Image 1 (cartoon, protein in one colour):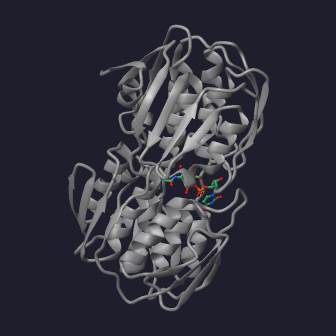
Image 2: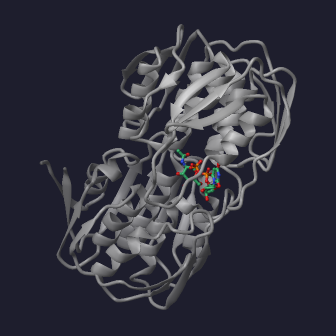
Image 3: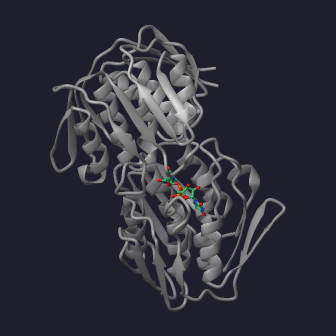
Length: 419
Ligand code: UD1
């Protein structure tokens, strides 16, 4: 397993180009199953999660071609079964359920396994499929969906922890080929849901309200091929802004969409950083005096759970006491014990971390546990004393395109040790 060594004590400066959004690209690639015609998807990031999705699509019978960020997919004849050995590697594999059900009225996909950021049920996805008229059976570790026909319905997708992002996508993808009108209440408002809706509309679907809590879909008999460019990854952009906050003199994220970064920009400004933006870039400067923060993660447009770990790393070395409350995935605090190994002072109480800022962290061997937690450890290591050895970096490669190379181009000193 590869590991990375972060030599601490650096200062970052310069511009970094943001890639296409992983969380948009995954369901959009799955949505190509909805048509027999060729789809061309541009700005697909080069990440292991994307590779898993393309492997699943290949196993389902799609012809897949990929060249420098452009993926061409033709799902002329498809199978409806996705076996455990490929599905288990990525929880987002569940987003083939919606398109398979929509097009073939049948799907057999293994239930995704456990996840380190906590229990991640898919009850809301299944409830939505049932409302559309599918018979849902969970048996022998598989989810089996079957329907004679799908009928539009009124579906409330709001769960105990708020709306579901992939659940909203899954129901949209099934409902576009259902008969009649589907009304989704409590829909996720994330930009990735809007991006998926825009792709489906380009394929001929009739969808309105994406980006609000109420999405309406009027089923159509079939969809056609389409071209689409994936939106910029707002979590990658946010992560590099926090890198600038932690170890920067002036860092600019380019090819991004500042409108998608509202809550992150607001939080960084509240913490005392100076931020400015153009139509497609955001710059952070370390001017001004630092202030501790109280943050609560929330569904979009609230503060994203996918930025929580990176902010914990930043707040660990800022004066004063900050409080970070996680409401979306209450158990998502695996990074806290690793940050403490580096000298952070953090009290964890249920879904709330109280962070007492210390002057400096020190390098230590630490373990990457999940995607964003791993990014947080890299960020924490940048200004730390000495070398931080981060093991199990495959987690970080799931969601960040060459994060080590991009940070090195800004002035970091990170080595990747292949094993
Ligand atoms: C997506 C993102 C992930 C992000 C998350 C929340 C992708 C590939 N992943 O994950 O990076 O952290 O949104 O912004 O897009 N829930 C249920 N029942 C369900 C589904 C979800 O109770 O059927 C709960 C979850 O346990 C969680 C909350 O709802 O507490 C939100 O989860 P959800 O929005 O579904 O996350 P994902 O779509 O899986």
